[in-house]
Length: 196
Ligand SMILES: C[S@@+](CC[C@H](N)C(=O)[O-])C[C@H]1O[C@@H](n2cnc3c(N)ncnc32)[C@H](O)[C@@H]1O
Image (tube, rainbow, N blue to C red; front, side, top):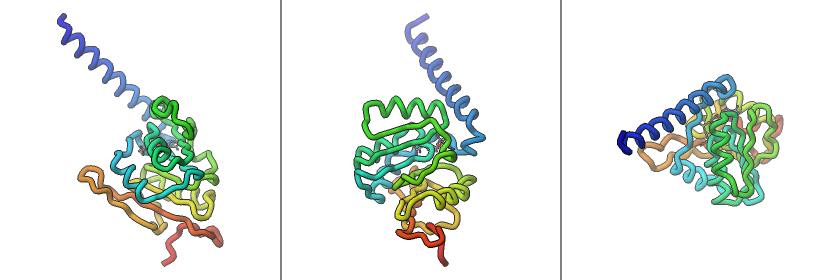
């Protein structure tokens, strides 16, 4: 067998194994993720979000379903924030841990974010699925502090009025990024709600 054929078979085997692991890891957590597959946000979209949401180094950014952790690393690099990601997909979690090795200020937890209290978050980032956004809005209203920012890729939070909607300048990655800012005070905890 020629060396080329052998190399091709090894490459095909590696790709197949990778794909199989992806399918198994994703299918296994579907009841928890409710449709939010392990897909990474394009860097042009992350940069657009970082341009639109300035942060202070003492703030905490939380990515709900952090995938391979790229949003955590990019936020840390740009603003020096502390960054925390929750992830239940084993493959995504391992990638996030490995790729973030040696980067201080980043924490990745293999946990379902629905069971976490998010009160310490200053900025919440998410790229989830429409089916969960209403429930997520309720959770964020109950837990986040006044003034916190919420950024949602592609899917809006029903009933909330965005502070800004960003459309990255990209043919393939130009979908909306919704940015919300919770009022500095929240009488009756009507946080982020549309008032009209
Ligand atoms: C579309 S990906 C986004 C990944 C990353 N935030 C990014 O923008 O690159 C959504 C991720 O959320 C994770 N996820 C969905 N529901 C979750 C939950 N309840 N707890 C933890 N992770 C969750 C999925 O496993 C998936 O990796």
